[in-house]
Image (cartoon, rainbow, N blue to C red; front, side, top):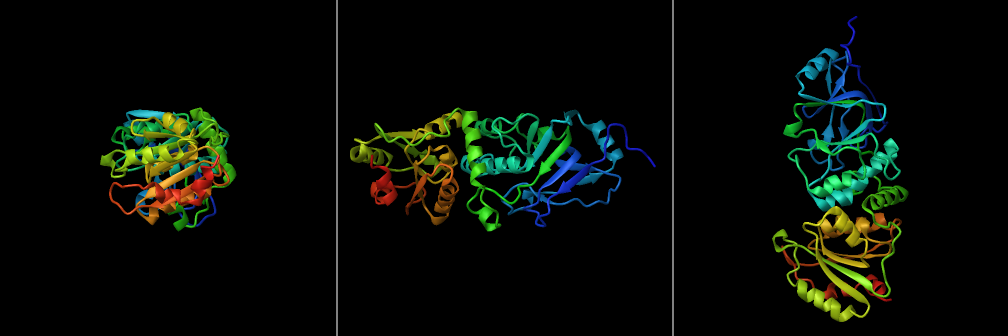
Length: 369
């Protein structure tokens, strides 16, 4: 019997008992990442490996990944052709392959990050803040070969190395030698539509709380801070540029109206999040008693709101409000925030009347010192 070529150790794997690919978790040992694929080395080249979801949005085949099989000789030849070899094979190294909406702030911060942390904590034991040593996160997503700075800032709170996309053209001649590789979303995730549609469970409150505490420590905010009420509350009005299609056409009127009605008990501040870093946004939102914003990216900052804060979510349809509703429910046992859901009928930019959210009982109660 022929022996495997030197330094090529045959792979092995173990998967959870879930039959559905979207809930399955698999851990692979002695694996290779090469030319956008995960390679499993074995003499049994007819072996069919399990298919695993690497994204909770299981609406396309891109959400799934099935490792490819090659022989020791085949992998040895591939190693000879690689220009660069990254060695993640030490006893402390482990890799998690996933897919996320890295170019959408709201979905990434609001859904992908807590879901990713949940997987790392529940399945890899990476629960403690700052437990990043030896952990490498690898993205596998088409056409997302660069991303905004908030992605690297958030990833630095979870992993040791900078995020790489294994499908990026710049990675096609780089081989990653991996001691231990983890794939799969599991049975829990944080998302309003996709997780509920596939009968996944919400993230347990204690893990969501641990995620928020870890991010707070990483970004330098106080996870125990309670929304200020004295000497005044802080009302944060978040607008977006007109070109975004989610701009308050009467934004100055809104700010003046709030100042006239509530100026004696609240300081009203108008802010735009464009060009603000993740750190700056986290600190700003963590200081608010009430945050008023259009549906979209700002939902990603709800986890940074202090305890007992109010999020006033303005949207054009019920689907947008569904996202805000589930954020409120998931954070209820974490920060006990309240959501005021406002449905407007203008498109694409909107005119907001204060009476549309002022009539809410939650709003009046929270604005009472």
